[in-house]
Image (cartoon, rainbow, N blue to C red; front, side, top):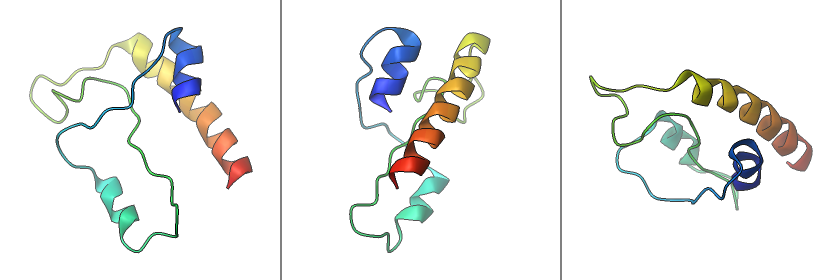
Length: 78
């Protein structure tokens, strides 16, 4: 994901812990050994699911391309 994001935005993207929860946590109940898991999406995690949540159109569109590349890459590796 970091390599895909770096190619899309032209700079290193740090992996960080973010506050809050995600429905994706349901995937972590009895996962296979070494199940890769990360939350990767557009917007600002500090305002996610709040009244002032927003996502810039350019970021939204870049994430469509990044998801396409990510899913293609992951599906061939796993």
